[in-house]
Amino acid sequence: MPFVKFLSEDAGQPDIVRALAHRLRGLPKQSQRILREPSELTPAQREFIGSYVSGLNDCPH
Image (cartoon, rainbow, N blue to C red):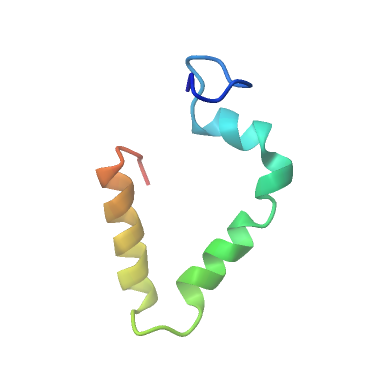
């Protein structure tokens, strides 16, 4: 991740989460709100979309 100065060249997602933990504290709660609040899509459909996009981004889900 050379475009992020505070990370090494071989840093991955876990390194980003550790480095930015103070900024990412609310992410799990926000993710659950997005997946579980009333919507035209079911929670399963939203999970599928998230998994599909992760796959497109070469990010294991």
